[in-house]
Structure formats: C-alpha cells, structure tokens
Length: 322
Image (cartoon, rainbow, N blue to C red; front, side):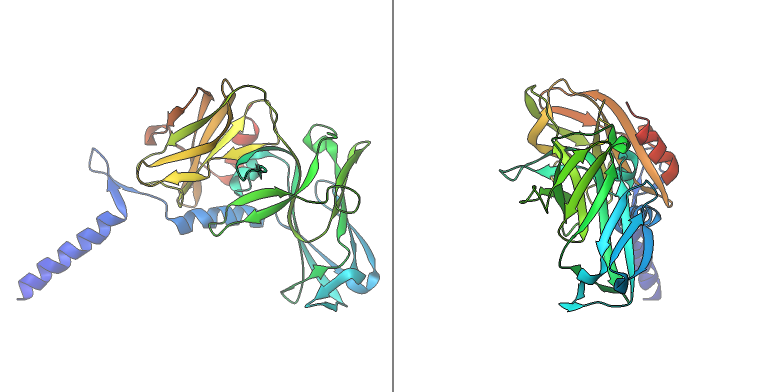
C-alpha cells in the first residue's frame, strides 16, 4: 500500500508539473509566463511612469508642471470627498504617455470606439492619467481641471484633435471613448505650440483623432507561440510613419489560438510592425515582424524569433520603429 501511495504521489506531481510547462522537441522544459507575472510587469511599467505632487486644497488655484512640461491647473476649492468640500493636504498622481514604447509597456494603446461600437486606431496628442486623493481616499472635482500640453511632444498642432475618456475593462485593457462635449468647457483646442484641454473628471484622458487612410480595409490574424494567449501575452501594431499611435489586437480565439483584429479597420497595403509581447523572468520577452498588410492575412510568431529585453530596452526598441 505504501508503494502504491508513493507511485500515485509521483504521478500526481508529474501531472501538476506538465500542466504549467511545455516540453520542446529536445525535451527541454519551457516555462510560460503566468497571467499574474505579465500583469505585474505592466503595472511596474505604469508605476515607474507615475509622477506625484502634493498641494494644499485651501490654496485655491494650483499650477503643477510635469516632467514633459505639461501644465496642470486645478482649483482646490472644487475638490470633494463623498460630496463634501476638501481642505488640507492633497496628493495627485499623474501619468503622461506620448511615445509608443511607453504605451506598449503600460498596455495603453490608442484604440478608439467608433459610433457602431467597433474600434480603430487613434493618433494621439498625449495620454494622461490624473488622480487626486486624500489619506488614500479618491477625490472628485466639481469644476473640472485644465491642462496645457506642448504640441511639439507629438509632432506639432493638429486642429482635428478632440478629447477622449479612457475606459478599462475587467481584463485591464483600455479603450477610448470620445467625450460628448468637445467644445468650450469640455473640449480641446490648439493655439500656438500648445493644446489647451478642459477635463471634467479625473481618470484616463486622451487628446486624439482617428487615423485616416482611404485604402480598402481588412482584418488580420496573428498566431503566437504555443502556451501563450490573451492572459499572458499581447499583440500590438505599430503603423509605420505614425509616432503616436499604437493599435492592439484585442480579441483572442481559444479554439484557433489566434489573436484577431476583427473589426476590419486595417488598410490593405499598410506598412507596419507587428509586436508580440510577454513576460519572462521579470523581463520582457518580445518579437517584432515588419509586415505589409494583405487582405485577411495571417502573421505567425515562433519561439525562435523572440528575444529578452528590460523595460527600458524594449521601450527604446519600439520608439525606434519607423
């Protein structure tokens, strides 16, 4: 009986081992990233880009300047906690994303919601997160806040830019919805070398417009190495010639093992780079393919194409794409 128990225990441990690993052709065990490890990597990237400010709400109008030169104007008299005015010390968290490398590592691509509910690429004048707290409690504002954003951070002024609000789903993925009021005290305009934005609430916001390309559109599919799916990896598209837009393939079919851009919004003939990203040993594991989009194309990534990089290295690699 003891021998049977020993054999059973050994078999059980073997099953557990091989449900979390894969075996390659040469019998080497391949460990795949867990969803938790991949999420931790993205959260660490976001934390590293988060700036913090402190001010006294009793001082009224507050002017803060970010690392990139964005001016943030907040009226402390408008801050509330559960509907009651706030006094005393306030903490402000601020994130600014202007480059595709940071958008990728923080999982903040520029995909906007079309009127029919589909998603399409946005060209960004800057993605921002603003959060005011007091003793850990999240505050609200009754009169909004303003920002002055240097346009040279994103290639100069663009009069077609509007304001967008970020919506994060249960899986931690971000989608942008255009603000209903994009005029006056709820919009954005370009003047000189600045965008002036009027934001009604804290959270994620974006100065954006839809990417415009008259060519016929298509869907694409992307196959990633075995053992990866939409919980422990992501697939992004960097459009050549566009420095401030990063698309992602937000749909995954567990039956086929394919990521999909199923909205049919990618121009046929587009020159771009497809990026596979995941985690390995607290670093980024990635692969990049230069692609010219064909109708209903399928792009395949293999383990042999992947490389390992730190966050800083991957950010520089993505920012250097054409």
